[in-house]
Length: 243
Image (cartoon, rainbow, N blue to C red):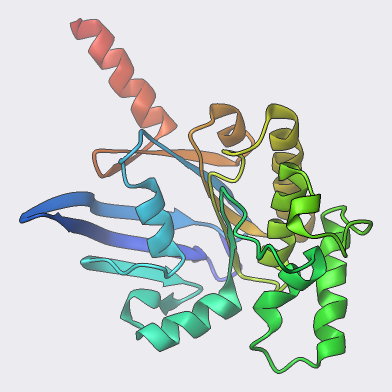
């Protein structure tokens, strides 16, 4: 829990559906979730279970049909689109499966991008970008283009870009999904260090149980409903008894 006894992220009664053709397809149903400051949470579940949708709600990318998403006391579901854009820029670092780097920019220029709309002078922006790259172990790759980097190195550039603004929250959507096992282990180790050494709060969507096991806690989404590992185990035991 945070110092004032409240969670950093509080999700209450979150509901979301999409239109497919003429039909309404429910994705999330009355989701309640607390994420403590400094926590590392993994969200697991089958494809289409709503994991990325929930992550997008927490990150302010998408809005719920009903319910609240409070991050550090701010009900982001009530913000306008322009307010949300400013809030995301200040408070959320994004890590994606496919890196989303600009191919014509060097590593340090990619990391510097989130600072472009700030009032920081150019020299300070560059200094922060270089510091972020050093934190992820790429001080010798700053002037390389993405095409000159391995997949694991590109993801480390993406992580440096995510942390360069010192965000309140890091959200990672399948951050190891496009990497081989060795590179994935490096990225997971880096996320662990960001969490334990810098105190970053991380919410990670993953299909990989080995990745999820690096987190402090694992929650499961299935058919739009959220469960703990204990809930899943209990249901499995009940099902085996009735089999």
